[in-house]
Image (cartoon, rainbow, N blue to C red; front, side):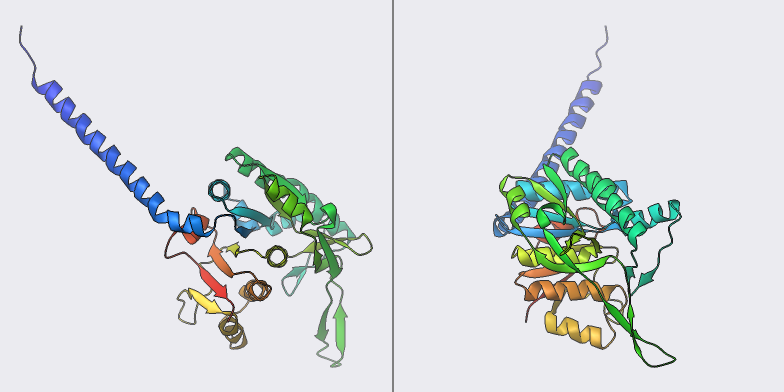
Length: 316
């Protein structure tokens, strides 16, 4: 009977190589955790408000990674508060229901028919999808809107423009489009104290009980200021604020940001985001960051690594 010593020798060698590779992987994981430790301690028991944009929600993979990031943030001692948008979802539903919609200065003109759809989509479909994703990732999320507990008391936005023919100043009626007038933090603080994660739909209530559609960036900034948050993180679909050569600007003071708006370097849809960040830091938020929400685990990269990501805006 012949023996076959080569087979067990090679098999054992392969197993040892595989074991060494697995050990190296575990060591790499341990190294990442130890490198993140100082940042985990830095944000322990700190409030971080995250604005989650409607465009990112359409990608299942991005939504799953976002939910994992939020749960991990909570497990490391951070107190995350999520404010979400839902513009693409609202637009799709309005189109489906054949309700016409237009924009003025980036704000959706919202009549009575449209506000009903806005509230249904934001507080119903979108809000509960995010809550479910976070809960499925192991968290404990609670979905609310600004109307709950009169958390966001809003006032109507008024826009004006100059008539090119007459030169007269005309008022533009945006319908039920508002901006935060007062943030009552009690509901949010109650949820946080219960070791849960608040997920907020940007719908507010007026002083006379009317419902207002509010820009999600604006709500996130106002909530961050009211909570005296350590960080405001705005997830968008660009790397951050870019200079005239197309390079990412990693850090700006509020004064520098205003200057870039004035000279046209910051333009278009980036202007309201930067203005939200400026307003937040001037309300007491330690720093506001504009991030590319399409990057996997970008929240963890920003919070738990030395380099961070996106553009950070701070006070003078």
